[in-house]
Image (tube, rainbow, N blue to C red; front, side):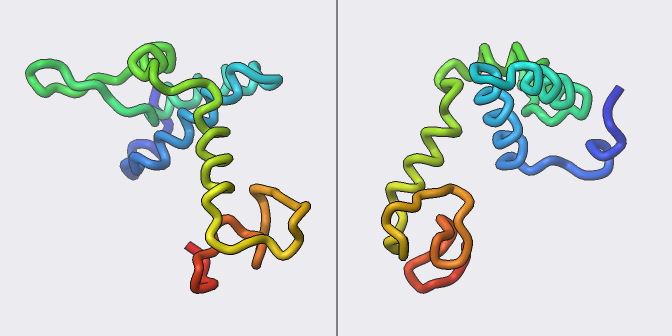
Length: 118
């Protein structure tokens, strides 16, 4: 049974992919039970991208089917994205030894060269 929230609004692609990447990351680490629960939620709320058949009809997928269709996405894909974003930071941190994904203000990875947040 689908969650009422999924029926109320379509889930943006980026949000759907982020949920999947989080579940994928958790599946190979210390929080495997959390990954299982998240995978169940993704299925129940129909948050995974649907597959199209040759006639253009959409079909829901379970988490395992989505993983199999996304073999190019490694379990640490989300971590790799975060590390790459960190390396491409436009503004050097004000404290060189502190490197965190949760930075705020001048330490934020979402800060642009103009000093604005993305």
